[in-house]
Image (cartoon, rainbow, N blue to C red; front, side):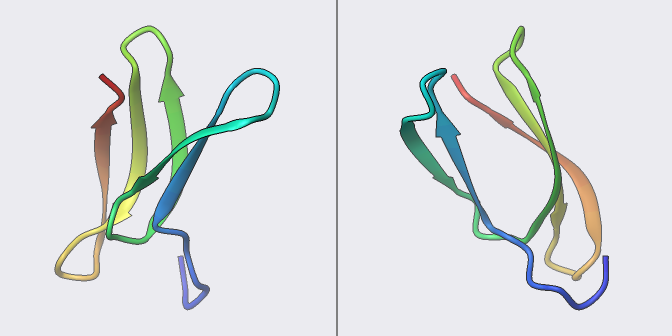
Length: 60
């Protein structure tokens, strides 16, 4: 992933492109995928040891 600055927030938009909420994670995020069926966001996130791991965030 390297030395680039990665985001720590996810902005959720409605279908019209209007932002509806912002999720502040407190850690650097890389790849993001959304499971609309389960209302879950999967991310590659930096942990306390500065390593990256798969994490999930519930939208419920």
